[in-house]
Image (tube, rainbow over all chains, first blue to last red; front, top):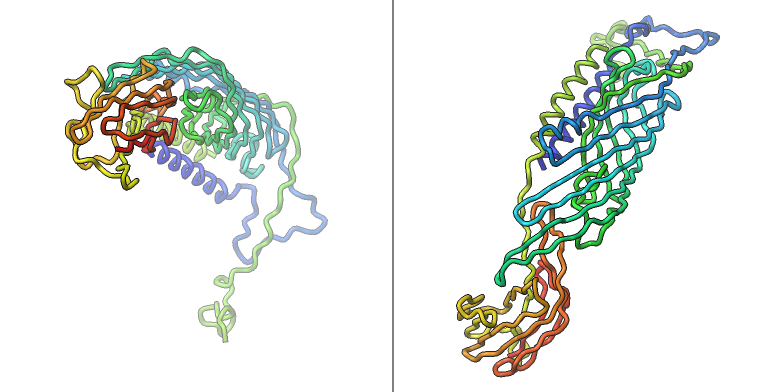
Length: 274
Length: 155
């Protein structure tokens, strides 16, 4: 439940940042909030912005930081992504995880590689994003190749202690994930960003009795839904620039409060029903 | 655009705090033992009926009783030995002794990360003497941590 609260709060933070971006007028926009709204001429060429497309290399630093506090949980991952246009980019991520867990009645070990591939969608307007900022969501398919073992498990009952073990076995796991996130340019070609991982298990491997507890790339697999968070340090290699046509804002109608009608008193009697 | 950067940094710090807060270990609230559940039926009526008194222990473990002159017991929970393929119980219903033997196989089963593993069983056969017990039948071979009847004892 605590983990759920954490991600809800993060999602709210994401939504709030998007709102701020959407509400912030660009300096170059014409000020059209009064009755003298600017109407572009029909022959005027459409506005464009030069949008740099980039290939990005991202390294997650949340996994190593967590490892510093929990030596039983190492995840190292990174990704390569390439912008297709100002809205979409392809992503290929790879990673490695080594997870150990033990408590009074069993111990568990797993390690393996995972890859995830898919498309990231930038929800920011090109004029706001400019290749420097990204707020959006990714849709990825993940595959994990891993081995796990239960070196020892035990249970005590009326008859005494029963012990057993499950030898190392290799499995494949499949999952899909939705990754809302945020990224901003720090300086130069370096960006910093985070993303949530909302993952749905498709296939976890293993028998139903000794199914894996943890799947590299997916996380704890007790449920068919898993959540996670990544913080990425990203290096951008800009490879091309494109001109993106910006949709012009439709000119606003004159504000009734600003243009009171003669003999209207409050100026809004046009909306009154007879 | 500076607000973007500030929000990013703030969200990263908040995220780490929340991540650390959310990584607290959970607790186990599930049943971790897989008992063989035996329902007690009065043969003359065919209805599930608690005997006046029931005692039960593992044969050879007389000093450690599972039930000791228990009254109002309609379903008995019999623990099985995961290190063996059979278990023998002495059961005393209304003061009359019988011996009940169960043959089974055992395998580990994951309950959850918090609870760990337990041992489930597959019941192959059961046998009983017939001093008080009239007959015995298997209703479900799979012995798990769920409340599901596995055998019926008619007395």
